[in-house]
Structure formats: C-alpha cells, structure tokens
Length: 439
Image 1 (cartoon, rainbow, N blue to C red):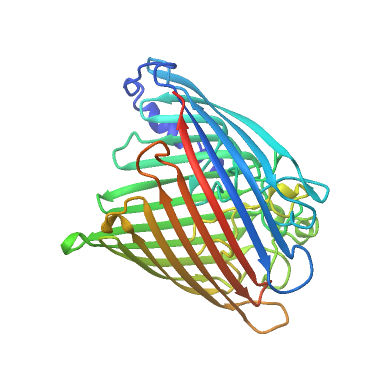
Image 2: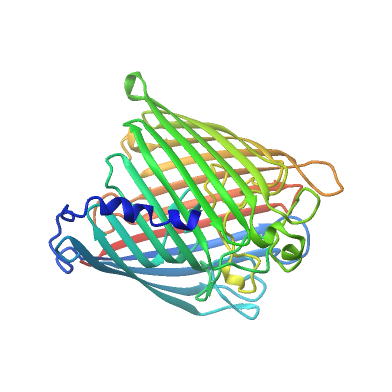
C-alpha cells in the first residue's frame, strides 16, 4: 500500500497539467557551477582502553564540483545536474589512520586520493520536480552526512511538489549509498547489521500552517529492517525588543519490518546493534525530543530534553557495519546528534543546553561561538545496571566578510565525551571552507 503512495506528488501535479512550468530561460541560460573546497584536520583521541582505534590524527583536502543546469522551456522542463568529488590525503600514517571515517583505507594506511562522480537527471512540471540519480536528502527520516571532507550521497528517485501553497510534498525510493570515506556504492542498512537493502521508501510533507508554525509528517520503510513514522512541529513566537522563542517538537515511532521481524532473518544478519528487549536484535523504538530556543540580539539559548524508548536503540540508515569500511558515518534528525555522540541508546534520557553568540551584535560580522552540554542517563544494558554518558562541545566559526579572501570560512571545534557505554573520547577539528562560483 505504501509503495502506491510514492508517486502521490506526481499525481497531484497532474491536476495542474494545463499550467505552464515556472519561468525558465533555458537549459544553458539558467545553468550554474560551483567549486567548493574543504581542508579538515581531524584529531580523535580515546582516553581509555588500549584497543584500536586509540588515536586518529590526519588532514585531508576535499573538492566538490557541482553543476546545475536550468530546465528546457515548455510545459515539461528537462535538466541535468552532476557532482564530481575529489579527496586528497595531506597528512596521515600507520597507526594514525584508524576510525576517522574521513579517508578510505588501503590496508592499514590511508589512500593518497579518492574520487567519485554522480549525475542527476531532473524533470519539472508546474511546481513538481522529479530527480533521478545522485541525491543529498535533507529530510527528517534521512539526512546526508557532511561532517568530514566529502559528503555522503545516495542514489535513487525523489519527487518534490510545491503545487499547493504552503505545502511541500516529498516522496521517493533510494537504492544505494556512497559513504563519506568511500568511492563504492553499497545498499542501505542499520548499525550492527551485516546485510543491506536496496529499497528505502519514503514520503511525507511540510505544511506552513502560519508564517510562524510548521507541521511535518514523514513515513519511511527500509525494506527488511524497519518502518518509521515521524511527526514534527516547529513554532516561533516573536517577542518584544526583537527577541523570539522557538519551540521544536519531534517524535519518531520505529518498528521492525521484513527479515528483522523474524528470528531467522536476524540470525542471517538483519539485526540492529546495542540493547534490545530480549537481546534478539529486533527494532522497536519510540523517541521524542523537545527543544526551546530563546534568541535576543546576538544571544541564543537552547534548552531541551529527549527520551529514547527502551525496546532498542533509535535507528536511521547507517552502513557502518557493512564490509566496506568507508561506508560508515551518518546523521540523525535529533537535536542530540553532536560531534561525538548522538544520545540515541535504548532507554536513554538526555537533558541538554546550548548557548550561541553572534558577534555581529558587537560589530564583528561573521564571527560566531557556541558551547553545548548534554547528559544522558538510564541507558539500557544487558546484564548490568543502567549506564550514563555526557558530552561537551565548543565551536568557534568565522567567515571573512570582504577583500581577496571574502567568504572563506574557518571553524575550530572541540568535543569531549565520557560514557559508561563505550570509550571516552577527546576530539578536535579545524576546518577551512571556501566556495568559488564558476558560472
């Protein structure tokens, strides 16, 4: 039944078949290309235990060339996008290239360079767009991870419709993923599984109820692993003096599907890692989060709470347990997804706070600093008492505002994580970002 819902956005657009596509100058006339460059120094030091990885320290340079065509003129517009990725190892070495998820491996060493290419065909009818090929989804049920040198990408089909004012509908099918430290395509999976799936169905929408209130609903199915429902609500309340109060509510309900629902399927590798009720690897989780952010001038203070159900860990696609060691690394749409931990273990209850200051209020535009602290308790563990963990993150960002190096961005990040459910980690990153428009 869900599979029949995937083309809903296309069917909706058909009611507007007589409407001309949005104004378009043409395939070449509206084309643009950008070269983005990122230099990243990554240092992750496990402060306890002797097992690998004990420390990762390396530097790499990434290049992302993106081309976006316009659409051909007419009722149905056609176009073609493409991205070319190149990573170059600047500094690494045996014993320091372990567990970063940043550079592909050649045995125990980092490769000298790696690259990939991904085209995307697209078609537009009225305000509905169909894309097939390389995708970088930014949806509550799947976020493309861009926390290292090169971004994680996916291959499949996505339809987005904005034919109804205030409503954005999205649906599609993803079949493969390319990890941020890999050039190979894999299927999609979950943490702990040794098997994958080439069918990730999704559909949902964002509705602007009012200018300050947005409601979201999405459904996703990773075949042979899980079904996931998401409901979200975000409201911004303007206050006197230019300040505001933003409330962000998120709820996920995830249940087993296909092979993960059977003992035989889980024994064959369709299981999730971490604590599960009955210690059987079956997915069964409810997770909710609430966050309130007060902003005034350059100040922003966010406070929140998140609770993960105790049936299993919270799950979204993660290929880290597959044989391709560069396939790992993923993001989740939760406010606790941070530098080191994501605070998504079964039973975990997390309180958190973050303070951010934008120095533009003091006459220094482009400079921003933040500090965050998260404390998780009640982590379920087999045959032991509940566990806890905490993380402290600090970030300093600066973007040059003028001159020869205008728009060059610098970011200094430091995080410390102490956990009874794993190993303690100190992590530092220094990042330089720069993008050049080519056309």
